[in-house]
Image (cartoon, rainbow, N blue to C red; front, side):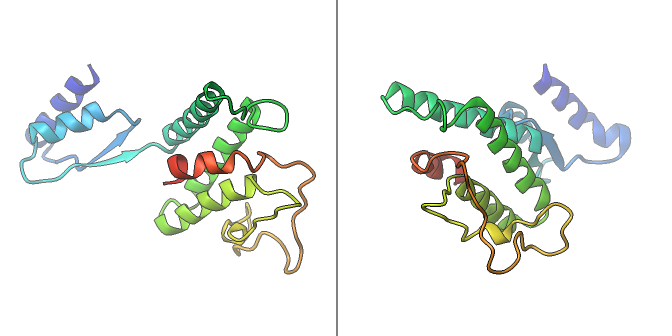
Length: 174
């Protein structure tokens, strides 16, 4: 239904409204975009796909749950107290969304912010890793520094134990 509606809209846009749609805001479903490209609605004019940030965050949430379940099936427990719980998955997804939204027009900065977020969440006082944290702007701050010079953040509890960090790097950050 969604695919057919998009094809009808795109095909009649030139004759009815005198314009071409060049960008599609998508929820991650590639069938519509695939059909539009396959149909060649505007011939030589390319159509660009943009994903909704909320759906990207939802996919991150799903990916984290899937990693936890896959590792559980392999005998590695990532869930439970002090580990990757549903509440922590929601928090990671929320921070991930903030990193995407706050750097919407600067892709390299967005990538660094996402990496900083994930790295920071695996940090402990015993094994601190704040190498990218200063690249993430604080809410309402005019500069990119999160902390005054020389001050270190304290982690009485780590958000996710460092044993989880190797599991997210290849599949979630890339």
